[in-house]
Length: 341
Image 1: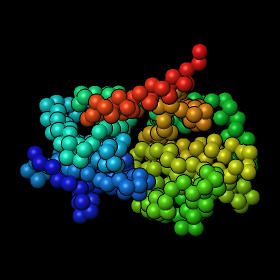
Image 2: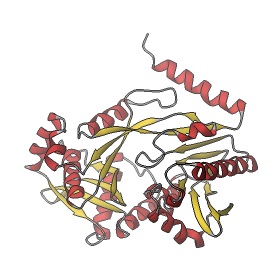
Image 3: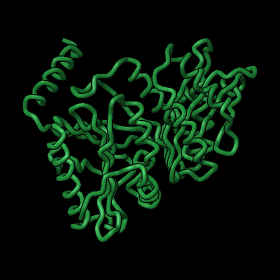
Image 4: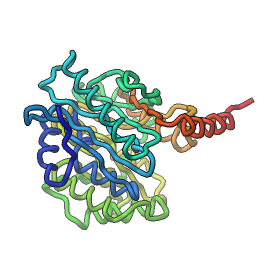
């Protein structure tokens, strides 16, 4: 086996691997890699492919920021290796030895990874590679169910808000066949208004628009009296969807998010999508994840649409004892301040 660094001329090969192997999802593609590099200032990619006899066996996205491998997605392996067995273990061991090698060469103090919840493995494999567990949960709706069952699993308050909102709000759906730049610009302007500031670079928004044009995302927009009052951008890839970005006009006291998400569920169901991941569930603060009241409220809102919780496995590995003590001393102290006596 050998490693081949990911360079621009290898993007096509990398994305073809993502499309044709079940371990990989949109998070593994070069589209998401480019977005993350733009989103994290002064970061660089050390991503690599693993090949044997000119065949790609695995891809490993890897982002270096200062003295850390930033939290990013777990390597994806070829389906040809099978679901279980020594072949997969051999490739995994090779990958993580190379990560350790790159860490040493770049004076990395910590590496962090996330495992896509709807992929293999369905346990925290990172712990087998000396990573510390820092997992969360995520909420998922099984769209293979009858729509009446999905609707019946919603919280009663959500059901009421959707019925109320449908009387006042219209939702427009934009995909690669219907999106215009002016529609996307309306989303971007409302995003700034909702946040009260410009939160990230223009390049990140340009990349999101490209996802829609490429068929890897959709934009759902809510209007009232022909005025845009809310948007949600939802990533779509290989029969699964993710609730990616949302904004609403703070001047309107309407259940905008409820309406948009319900319409998204209806559309995704109608077009044969299997799963819709609503995102992180942060029930309470953990030493490694101190949450705000808003974080808890967002999680509660997502759970109101029903579905089920899945483990969102994450892990981190330290290459420095002193850095481990520094990071985790701060965590312990912050968590202690959260405790009620």
